[in-house]
Image 1 (cartoon, rainbow over the protein chains, first blue to last red):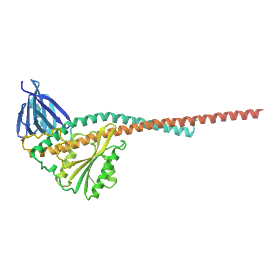
Image 2 (spheres, rainbow over the protein chains, first blue to last red):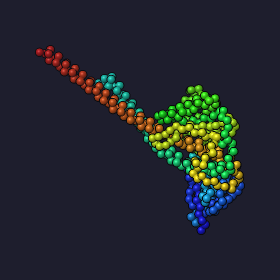
Image 3 (cartoon, one colour):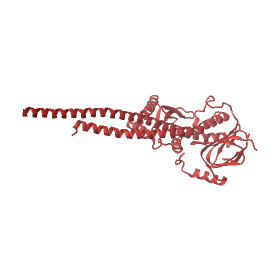
Image 4 (tube, helix red, strand yellow):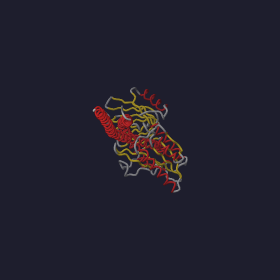
Length: 111
Length: 295
């Protein structure tokens, strides 16, 4: 099993997800990036898209993210998202949800 | 038949206890809202503290961030944001804050600086307008349950005026929520964004990141987010403070009403007793007179 690293997904309305993960995929403005434990320090701007977190062996959490930042530092990944929602389905559904988040009126959402 | 006095007092008692019911209801509503508002304040904190950490790390790593939002200029115009509430009945909540803001405006004027007012909440709006201040923009309907969209609307306006050079600094006046019993009006210098010093950041180590896309690009994206998040925090703190103040004010009102009812009831009883005494002495007097005439 891959070494775990700590992940926090936070948005202004609260912490969405927090825990240990083995693998994480996010979409930055430059393209998709996968993170494993021991990744070099990274600061990236996220674009709207799905974030996949593999954790606890076989669990996968998909989160739809609308913009934000990702910081990787000392085996700790912090995703600072403008808006994000945990989606139940697979990656395609998360991607759709992310699009919906970005289409919504930015002045019209509740926490 | 009840005398005029008694009738008037009874009417007052009825009116006071009706008021008491209303203030009591408002007290309970405010109390339930405090809890929710408090939770939202707590929930928003991890985001803001992570943002600050990131900004200070990037700032340190990229070496003296020369971004527009953090550039210090000679201040000739100050933007002032006042976070008040839309509704009153919250004790001194609004007046304390507005007075503090007004003093600051006076101070800036004395120093020869212009001010631009961005007002949140009907209370500050009506007060400042009445006093003849020119208000540049008013936001209503935000303070009861602020959401991030509200903060973004305010942040966009503030950033826009700062970037366009209309204002050279931005100060925010809001009420800091310390506890249910303790909220203090607070002044914060929001813009230019002051790079957090090493003492402020949790970990004072420097990290050399690899950036996607670039450090400058990241900073230019993250600083507006920071302003938004900060304003969101101010709105949430103010909202929690407002509910706490209202709860306290309404509790005092309820207690006063209860006290007043007690006093009025006593006065009413006295009046009733006086009436009965008068009646009895009239009857006795009448009977005496009859007996005297029969004899």
